[in-house]
Amino acid sequence: MRVKSLMVVVCLVGSALLSPRAIAQSGGRATPAAPPALQTVPAVPVPPAPPAASAPAAARTPEVTCKVDFLLTRFQGEKKLASLPYTILIATGGRSATLRSGSQVPIPSGKDGGISYQTVGVSISIQNVSAVGDGRFNLYLSFDDSSVAEQNSPGTGSLAPVIRSNAFSSNVLVREGQPLQFSVATDKVSGETLKAELTLTVLK
Image (cartoon, rainbow, N blue to C red):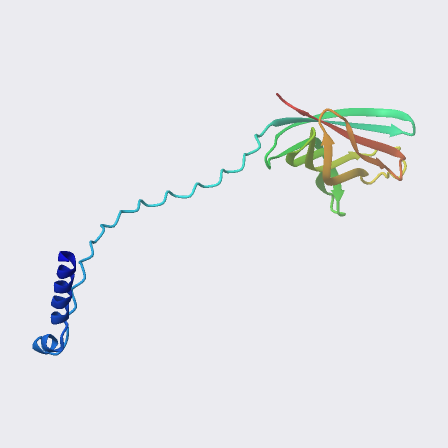
């Protein structure tokens, strides 16, 4: 009975607070309770992102020095007339090397007895030697061989010397240590044949 009495008292008090009279005394509107204040959480500082790692640079192929041996052999039919060796040293990596061996030949020019000179001999130029794998190398080769024909050779005259010339230029692919015959040329007048070969060796 006591518990029920307390509940009745609480209900009466609540009804009195919400009665029209109480609302009128408070100015005609009920004042709601203020909500509890929200607590502000301090911002946590965010560390800057680390810089992106740069891609590793491509490995550079080390340069090496190559020895290029040339052998020029002249034939008259099946008979060997002469065999001349030449050697050039060149480094890989876009380098170039040139070998020239010869002499100046006087050549009469005009009717007034003037004389000009022409270089005859061997000129060999090598450029851009690069390894392509499996022991092979690519290079650009320019080759020129010239000589003075003998006086009693076919096609010669008494007024001026006859200059014979063979020229070759191309990119070639050669395997280290293996001879490569890169040119065979036959003179149409004399019938002489020039065979040219090269052998590349990497110096350790």
